Amino acid sequence: MSRIGRLPIAVPAGVQVELSGSDVKVKGPKGQMQRAFSPLIDIALENSQITITRRSDNPAERALHGTTRAVLNNMVRGVSSGFERILEWDGVGYRAEMSGPTLVLHMGYSHPIKVEPPQGISFEVDLKTRQIKVLGYDKEVVGQTASEIRAVRPVEPYLGKGLHYLGEKIRRKAGKSGKGKK
Image (cartoon, rainbow, N blue to C red; front, top):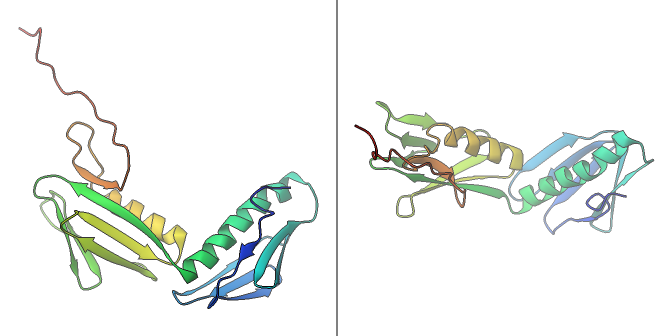
């Protein structure tokens, strides 16, 4: 049995879960999500806990067991408390600001870059700590949006300027030494 897959998912107060076959609909204070899972995996709701079981030890079912549980747990956690991804920027003249719901990035290009938030995503900018927060209830969309923002100006390895995730280890390269050249 999968160590992750056999763990039950606790449904917090204020979250409603509807099961119809292999389709799961989760509704909470942050939003609503719906997803169709594989019919090879059985999903059951009892006593405000969701349990995921598989029918046999086929490799296809074993592969889906833990994944189904993790995705379903992220759905329940997302609609109840939400997810966030934090980006930082370093560099002289680099800045970010909000223009309504739109994120405007000034990252050393000749023009500002405007990032429209997808459905269910919001941005927060803190100028003192030089951070951008990507907030939302769908973990997949939050991560994808943060990745697209980071791709606007990835960190360069010599000076460390650019956009990076909070706590990300930046590999730095040594510059020119200038010794021994004539």
